[in-house]
Image 1 (cartoon, helix red, strand yellow):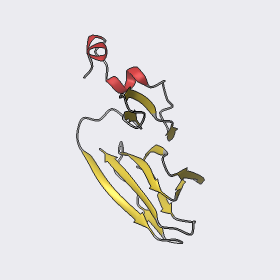
Image 2 (image 1 turned 120 degrees about the horizontal axis):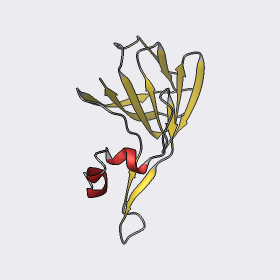
Image 3 (image 1 turned 45 degrees about the horizontal axis):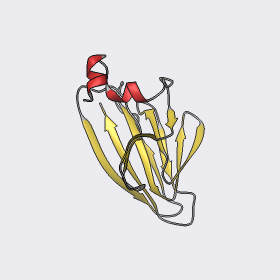
Length: 130
């Protein structure tokens, strides 16, 4: 933990990211480090408080493929980061389009679905936090 966050007794992510809503959140990356080379950098994509477990998943969906999820136990949430393609996330009756290079977080204790409505393979990473 960087010294400034430690001195304030707060997570580094809270220090560098503006306050976000407690419901589903699409966030822009926050550059937290830049090297001498323009391509050397660290970007905070998403953050959430967690004290139990985190799962890291790699997903791919072919064109027209859809995955219908059952609600997770209360208090669980997911982060998704799209590597290629466009992820269509169906959540609480609202459709969110998440483009390559974008991330999104949401409470997963509700019905939701992942879909690939595009013409190319969709690839994304997801973290499940409980």
